[in-house]
Image (cartoon, rainbow, N blue to C red; front, side):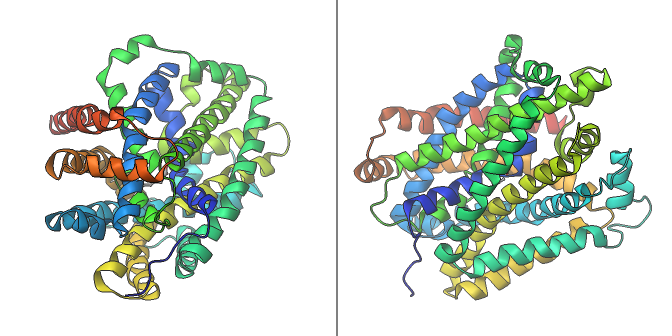
Length: 454
Ligand code: PHE
């Protein structure tokens, strides 16, 4: 069997891990989730979830990949022969996510293009659903393919697969080395401009004003944990796969902290930027911040075009920067998601990277066409809801319980990472993974079941 590929440098690996973590979730998901869950008070459960679940699991997955040197299924199989399915299950979730994640990036490409002429006009909502997505009732199950989505979707897949064909060092690493610094520069431009807008402080006040009562609400904690998993790309086979390309002696603990803090730093910056702009919008249109803040797809593709319209000068450029950032952040994450199954196929069937990319990438690209149809956005909403409410928490729960209680692998992992890392992790790490995280994720799971079944 061919020698396993390796990263060219430590910075290359860390940039790729950051590229995976920083994605669509950071730019539109975090600001909205934070706002909905008590503004500034959300930062406390958020940091708690980061320290007790996000970083400990990231250290665990980095170590698993480096020690067992395989894609997620191979890594789990090497831990215990009966555990291979866990890796495939994580890959299955990653696969589903990639099919619609790619479509949202495609929308962002179209919107980057629309920015040049502010094509959405005075009614961005009508534009999004009627003119762009061509949503129509009574068109059958899927309706026909929408060319405005299809063409950028082809660009998304062609770019992603071209990068993956090139391999770990010349493809994934090189792409992240170029795209991540560009993304950070572009994003800083937006945040600085946003902070100098009139009304910025109103938005920041809404974002940072703590709602202490909210801390007593369990669903705020559930939201914080869910978001940390999504945002850090843990429990989806991704970080195991990326770290399986690490040299045997590379530092783990430092890299995990750098990755996690960069991701959260970017995320909080995104919150500041988005809310400063929402504050501007609220003040200039004389309404409350609640009337302009909207979640998910709406925030990015309806509220932002509205804001861009009213922007004092350089509207087109600002639109280009915002949607361009979504595209860059999204592509570097999509690469990591698809790499999970490319690596899985390669290890399992002992085929070349090229074949694995054609089969795995080709299949997900094909399935993603479903979301490029006239009913695509409705199907996308449903799949995303299911993944967020069941896929993510359940996958995290199964992972920590299996590693901590079933296979009892944590002591071995801790020894390994402390041997290769500069600074050592203590018993807090084991306690978080064996006790704190399983309890909280368990409650999350039951709560979700109850709210969805009743
Ligand atoms: N973490 C990335 C984001 O915030 C991408 C991602 C999402 C990875 C979901 C895995 C699962 O968008």
